[in-house]
Length: 334
Image (cartoon, rainbow, N blue to C red; front, side, top):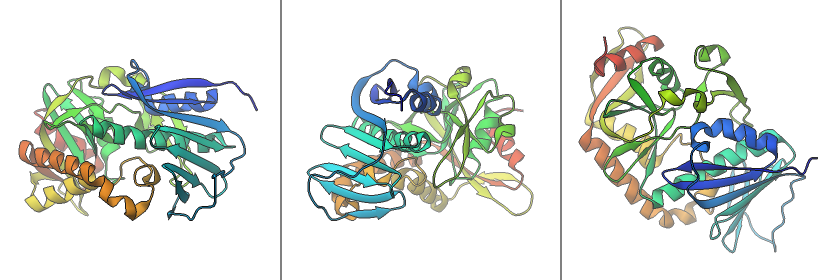
């Protein structure tokens, strides 16, 4: 196999993760990270090396596994985590040095594992810099920012597709956004997910993203949509909560406190649905829970800001096309 190597940086709010690996893998990662891979590199806080070779688990001594997760068996020794991905890849990560290595024979596996590892470590490093991630579609109109919260498959990407055609609405994130200590929304401009190539009509070229456990995903490179993405933070004024209903009408109504607490807790405090791998966040499982207290406090603070600063509406949706119409109407469009 070719020994040729390429490097790229994924940069958000001045924090960078550097990835080095086979040119084909790097080219595909540049598509997935989109605009986040295009800007000036910030301070390199983490490094990932991808090696297309036979994966071998090489611990310095015998160890008992700390976790068995969907993606593999997790071992920890002396501040380094190893994940044996059921024979098809191995991830090794030194947390003190913030350096990792992923080995495997298949480019698809290297790309998926590198994407998730980079997002996992980037999220942790951004938290230390004062930014927390929320699993949501995020957008702005003028200075007003908004979030749409729904579980995976709940319509976030469909809404983003509708908003990409609205001239005065700009996207902050298709599936993830950042919140700072003041509750402002910041861009997380990775590429836009689509159900299938036909759903991307008018948006640009569609690229496949094979995933071992979650099927094939299609994405549109956010670099091709640069003029539709926001490049500055926005004041959070609206939070929309997605709820699907079995029959019409589709409508917007004031969200109850219970609904607001449930959605914000799920998508921000817990971070359900965030693209990451648990073994690079809490490598020892439950034993690492106490170390997550600072992170929990940061996320609780951000949740309090969201609940206090933004008006919340529940969108009861029967027809997917109505979702965009409800948001556009509330934002002041005809």
